Length: 418
Ligand code: AMP
Ligand code: GLY
Image 1: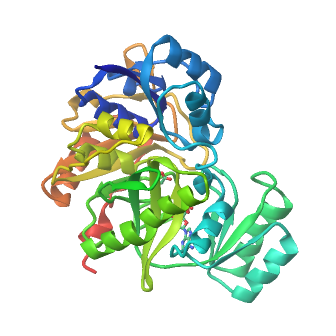
Image 2: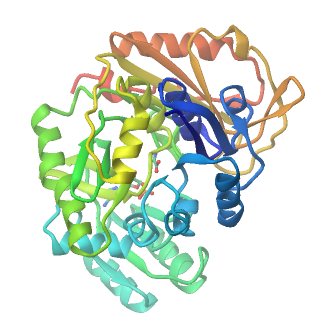
């Protein structure tokens, strides 16, 4: 029987989820709360914010939603999955307790230590003086992580003691992100990659690998962002690396969550690094990555509703993937990730040949306006990454808006000899 599906969120990730749902044979109607101008072309957008759980619940009951899929961590952190489950509604995502693997760095680090999952050595502090003494003892470079959701801004890779001290003061003395603790950890080196797995208790179904580019400018320079582009597959990760990541990291982590009494359901995202000492965990997220989802789901050949339901209901599923390459480039508002203006018209969207996922747009009649820091995700597909990149760059050139910038070197890790 076909069902109505509700997607919660408003970015490129949610647009890619909606797009995958349109390819399912089991979907009657797709709603998205709150959605954006691009999502509105494929789903009915509903003006409810992602954290308004009671309103979302009412909506799901009224529209007889058979499956709700949660994108953003903010909705998970306020317990949307717990609320829907208590009401007897099917929802894809982890409970608030399981989402702590993302929302609390200290929870994640303790779990990894207890279960022997490879990660950077660390200590956690609530006191500035003690943290400062430890940083001086360890030396730089060193990594400082604010323990809690800080909209991607809570991590500082400090090259000097001055930088480290400034970050510690922000986090522990000035409560810049709110009152909290700080995880101080060893600085690892090597290429980073994202390994997303569908997880239901101890069952783990791996997705294809992707890499995000977090820095704002070419050459991996400039401030950290939510991600400026992504691609899949990753030529520098071997099948042995992938097996290690699955069997020594993702599966044991899922098993650990079960053993801790907080079984995980949803997407477990491993932010991993291939260091000279082997693959280690940089962070876990409790949701689909953004923009990784925009390059991974287009490669999915299976019906995504089968997978969402298997995860939510504890059933079985098989994942099949297209043997193609995807590469996507983010068009961001000038100034992002710092202050930027919005409300500028975007033209040329109809001239594009490939797929565009909207990240931060809103409709104004027939016009599409910029409405966020990251605005559009321009996806290229091909038999090879080089073809995918050429397709994405062609479409970037067709989009007409004078107030956006993008990186021109997405995928450079795959194209350089190393
Ligand atoms: P996060 O916000 O946790 O994704 O961290 C942001 C970025 O900081 C990561 O993508 C890494 O590039 C970097 N980072 C975090 N932890 C470490 C670490 N232990 N060693 C080196 N780089 C790190
Ligand atoms: N692309 C990184 C994230 O979704 O957190």
